[in-house]
Image 1: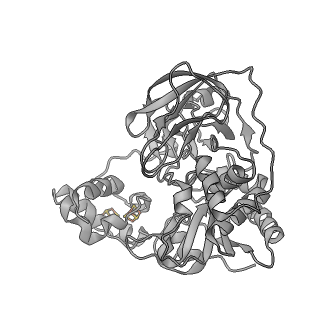
Image 2: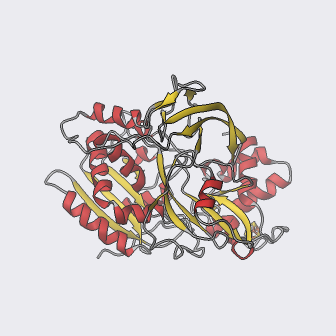
Image 3: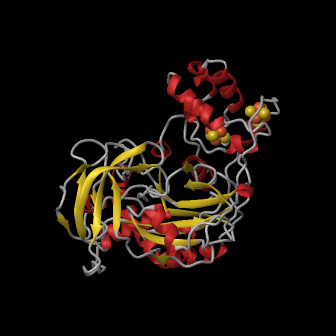
Length: 439
Ligand code: SF4
Ligand code: SF4
């Protein structure tokens, strides 16, 4: 066993809170009566509808696409009828354009059979990834076919698969690695072929020893004389799974300020995105289902659920027996980087990783106070930034002058706010600063 790897600077250790769901197998949730599919599910231009009201759609049919610019198509997760093209509840924007589909429960589910992909060219493989609407599942939803086409002058030599899953509570990637290790490795091999490289390293935090074993076996079975795939255990430290920190941990390369991983010769993909790539290429299956973790002390039954994209949180809660009276806050995503939602009408998108139903004991609602200049936020920041200064400048109406503190290198991990004894809203300060500061 190799020694455990990690990034060199900062990081925090929030309670893991993964025991509620880590041992629960992925459970397939039947489609509810209606799905609301948000048109803007990825970074780039939102999709335009490719259907109209009252159209009958089959499972897997394209219902939205992007004609120009960055984007990926949207598919219907079910057979049904387009009920409406309008607005749906959105956790960040309040309302967002969407397509509502009434589910035809009598239709037979689509069947996806594996077929060989090894004879396809890199360009054909890339086209399949795009056509299936694959976007980065673990992050902000960057269209995967674009990420798999790095700049021509980049000298890519290594693929990194991210199985860190460092956010507390979330166990969706953990279960995917346990239940589908072979398909994830097959997805990695497809990526290697697209990139024309032969080395893949998979990083998994050491709190998932069963996943490390399962993935190590699959990686060994998938390695050939040409392709070398291996698993490395990572220290349990947040934000181990962020791209730049993972690269430092696994290959010891530092991505320069404002640069992309391709600048240091690597491409990073989440393990669940690799699985979606396998399904897109080998099964011709579009990305329209999502494994998410439902957890927290405020939900009757925690679970790892495979849901159709477009399933409303309210339908999920009903499936799991409702919420408990102690529920204080609903968070989409993890407690460190997720966002609070105020409506059970919000639907799951391709990038939803979890929905947490948290009690008062699980959240910190103390009011914030003045900075006491303890410096803990500087020690916690994995990017070596000065969150204290950013906050003080924002409060002094000098947000425009914060580029000097590296505000654009902040990826809003929340480590600084987590350790701050004064509970200062440092991530919100950073977001304000980014709007005002000049690059
Ligand atoms: S949120 Fe930004 S400033 Fe705060 S610790 Fe993370 S990277 Fe550093
Ligand atoms: S951790 Fe909070 S109180 Fe301490 S220096 Fe940073 S902002 Fe100020």
